Length: 531
Ligand code: ATP
Ligand code: MG
Image 1 (cartoon, rainbow, N blue to C red):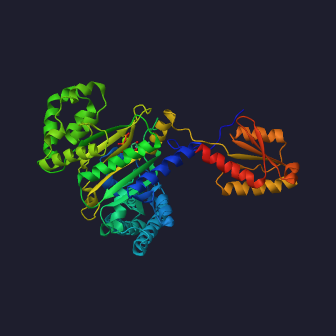
Image 2: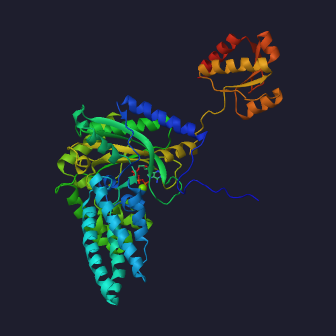
Image 3: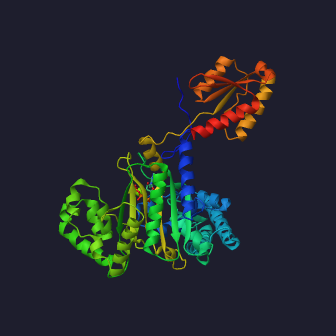
């Protein structure tokens, strides 16, 4: 019977394994190279940050922030946390007064430790914590007063109150923030902007061009192309001007990257969503809302709700029966202010100048106020309904929202998992594996020569498999074949003493003899021919 392995990767996460990781490395290396040629430098922000940062940057009402983040309280004070857990778990039906008095002592201890913790900065000095400290103080005064009364009168009505106190204490305790509330990053733009502000990057020559790659975390329903730990490759251009050439160059860069990795069926959609001023997007949103009101009855529940909360998001709807209705709605491009309209026209011209093909998609929108003007999305083949491999756009208001200097911003994020999947589906995913040379050795002298040969070959950049234990030649050649080796170098004590080494090409079985230096020379030449 096969017993089930006890530990498995957490739902929505997975191991990336060889040989597939070679493809990941290839893709990432291409990103480093291509982005480097556009003058971008790599930033590696931490994978967790204050939850508040993401709440502000991504938006508190978005699915990401409202239900998909992995958040935790990061406390320094473990004792305080343990004490709180103990007190919170306390039953509110207390039957023994002595038990209650012991409980009161523990609450007193908690309050003292909390006060000390705040003083020592081991616990954040927040309004909630200051209030909890004060509330617990006055509650403990009342408790002490009641206790003294009870000790003399044994009044049952007072005893009743003890139970109520336990409930109140619990509420106060739950309001305490023992540590900072942190989250695993669901995306990286917020972190990059935080870093720009924190390191005063507005003092550098503008714009600052940064790119990143790494894991992101969202508790979404796992499916094809959707994971809970997934990887993004992204870039941001921060500060300086919002000239349309910047937007166009950023898009040109992504497209060049996709081209370089061999992604097929790539389609670029662009749109402009104007900006947040009365004569621009808000005016359009009102028109959209009015138009939606007229067809409200024909829409599904989600869209009906969004007419109030965020009409732009109705345009995102994938519901079949809503499509013909949405097709009749007003287009934002027809309602942009003069500046935004000019910017959009210039971005399109600039894309043409760069030979970047695009399709205008008036339904491509973003629901957050600080997103403005250019938005774009790139889709690829072989991905089913999760076919977006890149989303991007301009977000000129974000930096200020995060407490930074006014600074323009535009960026994109590529879903690396989907990119890889698409490459694999289209047959572009095969990465050469195997070894260049498998050394089949037998005998002690041969082994010394084999070790030397392995070192020399590896120094030349050849991949070499040197078996750790002696194998019969037949067995060794079998292994060499299984590992997908191009050559087997056959080293027996005879070969070594004669100084004539046998190299067998595994594809056709042909053998040639070489001296040690000639062998290296031969392999170098073969490599030059095949590359
Ligand atoms: P989608 O509409 O596909 O959910 P999104 O709008 O949530 O995408 P962004 O936040 O713009 O996506 O992230 C950029 C890219 O990251 C997406 O285009 C996609 O390729 C990728 N991505 C987003 N969420 C996931 C996920 N859970 N698993 C894998 N890739 C993802
Ligand atoms: Mg999503």
